[in-house]
Length: 263
Ligand SMILES: [Zn+2]
Image (cartoon, rainbow, N blue to C red):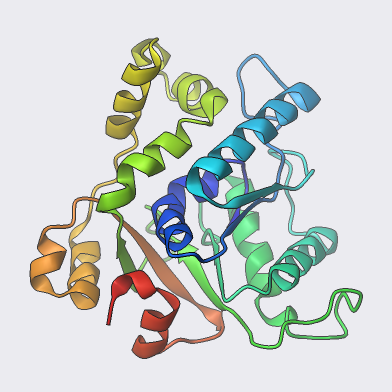
């Protein structure tokens, strides 16, 4: 899973990552920037160091490995150099599934992360590109994280995963990003005065503030994958859209790639 910042993958698909990890599958989060702009008082190398440590702790709580690339936050561009970094990461991991943001987003770093991963979606299989890292044999399935953007087209939840059982663990893992959850995001969002002081109150508060509602289209997708009865009981879900580039899975293949869906 690729995010622009150390905490993006966590929010987008942390629950699904936990489910994979519990089933014994290897999951990697990659942040394309080091997050060195995301704070109101800290910056530069000191901030990057703090965010790297937070990402490692979050990774431990999710049960995933967490890579942070040393590109500057707020300055990511879809250059050939970063594209090659993405291609190498996907090849070295021998990924079956790659998840990234859609290239429509309020934050340019998110947008370009989407573009960079799309640009890699075909080239990971081309041996003459970055020949020092052997090309992948089977083109992975590329997916997009859920987002709320409507233009030029709204997110389409092709796959929806019930994360109700692991939602508490997802929040606990996100709580590791202290500089973001309790400092930067509340500051830029003008709700810093609402952040509780005690550790236990903070996690409870995070559970409420980070809740992403299940929309009617996501409920319909849950019904497709889990059946009407099970879908109605789902409290928390994550959803993904299948990218048109890369492997195109049919329903059987989606169930093979997402064994938590059941048969
Ligand atoms: Zn971000």
